Each structure stands twice: as C-alpha cells, then as structure tokens.
Image 1 (cartoon, rainbow, N blue to C red):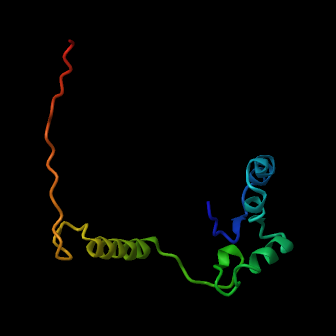
Image 2 (image 1 turned 90 degrees about the horizontal axis):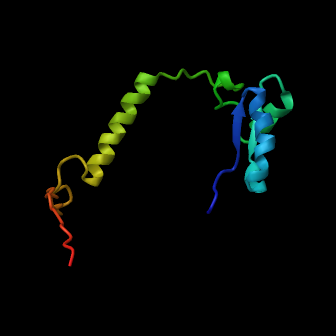
Length: 119
C-alpha cells in the first residue's frame, strides 16, 4: 500500500515503549520503522530530530516549541461540529434527500421468510 508518512514522533513516552518497539520492529517494514522517532525533552539530539521536521515556532510549548497557543477542547468541538454539519449538508446526508436535485430512494425494511422444503 502507498505510504505517505514522512515521520512520526512519540514525545516523552515511557521508556518501555521504545524497548517494546525495538522488539516489534522486526515485524514492520524497515522503511516504515525508520520513520518512528522517540523524542525526549531532556535529550537535545532527539529534539533536534523533531525540529528538522517541525518548526519550533509552530510547535506548542508543551512539546518543546515556542508556540504558546492554548488548546480549548470546547471551542475545537464546536468548530468540528460545524464542519460535520457542512460536510453532511454538502453530501446530502442531512435529511434533505433532494439536495442536488437528485432524489435518493427511500429504503423500507420488509420482513421476508424463506422456507426450504425437503423433497
């Protein structure tokens, strides 16, 4: 399958994760395994690896960056709900079946009984 991942970072994971990955990585395609990076805030070299992929200016402070934006789950949830409604409306999945001038046939459930007769 095509893979588009450039790099993945596990930031300050428990050390057991890295140890487990070393054991399990024999089961993963080597090219894919190389993309997973374990980053520890106290390890300057691992932080540099992450900075090569993510600009510290956009990386949140809690991940060793300089961006002090505050994440608010309620605000994010409202935005995502609004986006979901727009998407449903666009694809006609919002209950308005004649959205694009094409009506969608309504499927009614019918009970049927099939009996096999022995001959």
